[in-house]
Image (cartoon, rainbow, N blue to C red; front, side, top):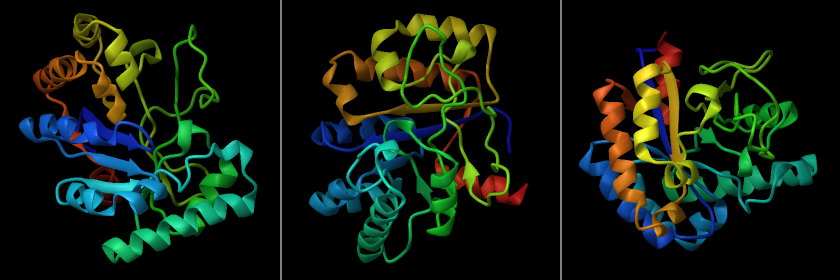
Length: 238
């Protein structure tokens, strides 16, 4: 893979869908590719809207109902995927490549199931997280670069943050001053990092301005912005 990659993604489930286009307008301004992880419920209810997004962005799976996967049986997990894939194929005439688990809650059995259902990559695992912050999806340190988990053919694109595990994510972008990220990138530029958010982050009137400042920092540091499909192809060709 090229040096210094930023994987850009948006998780879309229930709230703030009408605000997503404002975020996408910012992406277009900076010519950013991105992956939009949508639930099956969003795909069913807003299929024309999602079709429009697909003209410029990769559409991937965020489960069907957004129930946490640690509460589901094997059969329930399988149904979530099969229902999503069936709907996705009906709309796009192809299968989705990528998956992100609700709240990043995933395990080895789920990764195996994703491979069996024909997914090529997952982007659920938090490889590190700030020690002062509790998060239900964090299960301990994992590889910081995209990798193939042992015995599996599905690529894991980890949700990697900055130094000390500080995420480059919507809630953190809203809560932290942009100058702090500028300082962090002065001292440390990870070779791989993720920029992820939800549509409702834009309900904060400061969010888009802070997001643009983050994008300018990343561009100044010569990050190459890629979506999940592009990262997958780069890995397959390397």
